[in-house]
Length: 285
Length: 339
Picture 1 (cartoon, helix red, strand yellow):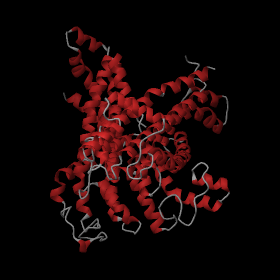
Picture 2 (cartoon, chains in turn orange, cyan; picture 1 turned 180 degrees about the horizontal axis):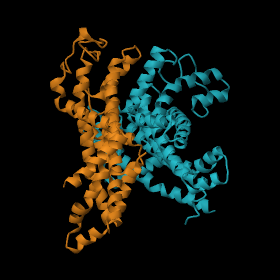
Picture 3 (cartoon, chains in turn blue, purple; picture 1 turned 90 degrees about the vertical axis):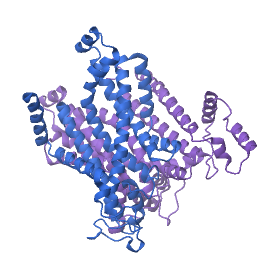
Picture 4 (tube, chains in turn red, yellow; picture 1 turned 60 degrees about the horizontal axis):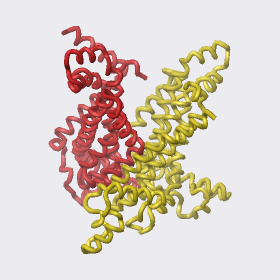
């Protein structure tokens, strides 16, 4: 037991020493989870409380990130927004992971018609510029946060389908699969217990890289007025609200939420690269 | 002859995606919450008016029949009328498309001009500062929200330094737009010999184009570097070196020509990202393209316009991918030999 545990740990240490940024990525992720869980409790001000006399104050000790056009504390709003942004991204990615890996496994395992139909479906999604498709979906299904989640899940589906399909297809006739079949396991059981676990490692990489994408996508949608609506605190909307003050020099309204967004995406990308090094050392760049 | 039939095959292969795109756009229109007829009739409409509008829109038929009507309308170039302006959506889109294309292409060219040499340099000098710069740019580039970079370029170059013109549209109000030939202001102005307008349009374009290119830089540089590394480790490169060919010749003629193929394929994907990012950049810079139009339509719940926009972008993307495939077929001597 000790030996089986030690090997991955050594590899983890080796990978981290080769790319110390991965540790930074995991650290940022821990911080984000903390803020998402306890953000509303530790924020110094009410993120929605307006005070007109206090509007557009530059950063100071009382308001480290300044105040916005309604006198709300930008620092508190950036902290509180973590939960919403992370929540949207996590739910969207979880949805596309579950549906995408199920469809991909079916396509890879059964081949034939299932493969063709599922393949066509994901090709059709990929034929759209993905952000534009998300815009269309939210516009027609209704301008709500749930629909932003569904739209983000839909545009990420093809990536999960592809990964799952490829991993399952190469192992479809592997020795252990045939052994399981001979011992009387049903197809679904083989898929779930023998093949699906193989899909998980590359999926983790995909999920991590995708979370960054999903956050960017959701923030982009709310930047153009879809999904999250004011006065909710959300990074994309805060940048959008700050946009009109940039040309008059009030930079702090957009800078801090924008930086938070950037750090979040950066953190997921670093984690994804680190996970890829762990899972598939041959693809290190 | 072999190549011609290949190209024809590619074009035929593009039919299913086009059909899928049209089908999805159609379903999106019909998935509107509530009854579109009630929506189009307005608040004051009575039962008769609603029934009349339903018949006019063809909504009293079954879904497959409606789809056939939709296809027929598309063939006639009829995307419906914009609710807010009352003009045909197609006309609106066509009048704004050149602005978007000019910006997207400028961003794409700029990012290619930076990313491809950077990727090649990084691959030929692994571990050097160029390689590290490439890695930093690649990681940072994919993390940058386009709308955020755009805003801060405005802050630095317009507000602080005053180098850039005000970020409002394609041309400062001091200038008249050049006579329309291509719809690209910079090219039209150059054709008309009006260099003042030419420079003015370039100055307006430079910040949004840089914003887009920062975004597109990362995937292109990453792919160029990876493809060059793969090509440089090829046996033909070793053979070329062993035969005493010069470094530049080996890199650009032997390695790069082989690395160009995956890079070209990546460009198709990058173009898709750019079309999406373009919407955000157009909003930041008040650029009067189809992205701004779509955002306006979204705010006004102008569904016909949004559907038209989605369809237009998707078809554009399919055409670009087709074009790239055809170019690949033409420049890759291996295609056609392997079969």
